[in-house]
Length: 303
Image (cartoon, rainbow, N blue to C red; front, side, top):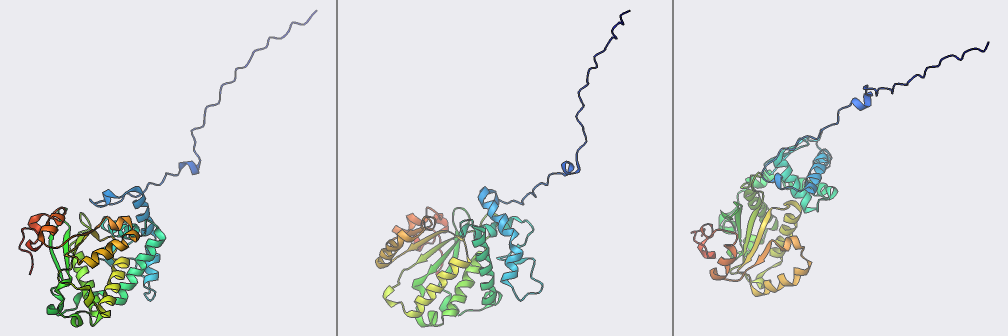
């Protein structure tokens, strides 16, 4: 007899169910970036500016160690212009750090060097003592004034070069003049809140100034002051006006114009002489009610 073939049954394979188990590595939560404290000024930062600010903030311990090599231990925070700088995120601190970053084209390494140099300079100058120093008002009292605000609420400072009556008394001691000039700048900065306002308008009045009368001390003082403000007070000027400018100085300005950066040039304006010429220019930035009459405004102003 022929053996009947055995019946065979096909076995269907059930697809494997994907495992719901995760590895320890996959289970790690993705770290979330700490939300930055904000104010009206930080909300205007670009992404590139935020990147530079965060990079500079991370470098602060190293900056402090280099700036204060004799401190043991090195400080973990410092106060600059009334704002505490540390690795802890803070909106006002971000505004200050952004100034150094912008002044160095958002290059964190160069901004770090600038901030460190500024801290060392302030320490060597003994800035706290400079702020307490008393200066002869008959000599220095007329040279600088803070009066009014611009249309955005920025304080307006006036540098009155024609008010110098005694060149030797004013510039004979160059370092004394520098200390007065730094004190005037620091007092002006106290008017900034670093929340809505972090810049000022500066007006340089050359009425009564003769460039032929400048001596070596005055030139040395001007050169050192310029160096200080360029390297240690970054991005504090919104606008700078040169008014009652002698014709020779106007020509010098135009001569150097090609080598001035576009960003700096955009902040600078050279104006003619007298209220009728000055008023229309300044009133574009400063309301006439905040502008002294001597400059074409309506305010009584200062003596």
